[in-house]
Length: 233
Image 1: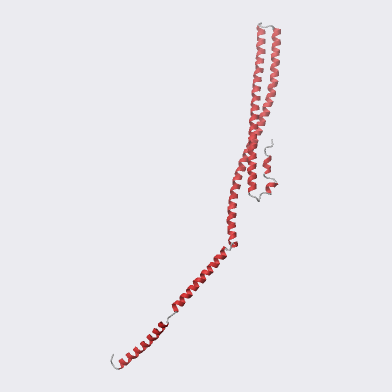
Image 2 (image 1 turned 120 degrees about the horizontal axis):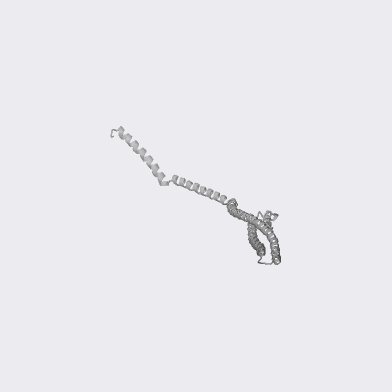
């Protein structure tokens, strides 16, 4: 049987050329598994047929073995009757010889059927070994396919994240944020400057009142000094 040819296909050059396309190894592995399952079905069918053939051969051998023993017993029975005088000796010997000849022919067939049965059973054992190997490989490839699919999902997700990260600078997002920060700082500085100007700004009236206030204070001080000298305080 040549049921493992397709296993080699997965390791051929066309797979190596498709490694960069993550879908191709998955598709090819799935196809390989489907083909192996088809081979498994065919192998199971062949196993059933060869086992059935071995069983039929064994049954035929058993029947012919039984028939051979029957002819042997018949020959003995004939000679026993002749010994007792129940049958004529010449006729009995002739019949006994024919019975023994039939027995020998059956034994030849029994031996041939035994050899055929052994061949069929050996073939069935060989097919069973191939089936066990094929089942093992199918399970192995299915598990590896699951792992491969998981790795593909992770790699694609990682690629998308890294791609987004890589596109941040190209989209000038960081530069835009920096410009916005500078603009806000400029606005804040300008607002503070206007605040300082507002706090320091005084009206003309304020300046006059301040000046008058200072003079009045000086006049009052001088008046108090005169009153003190005159003893009025």
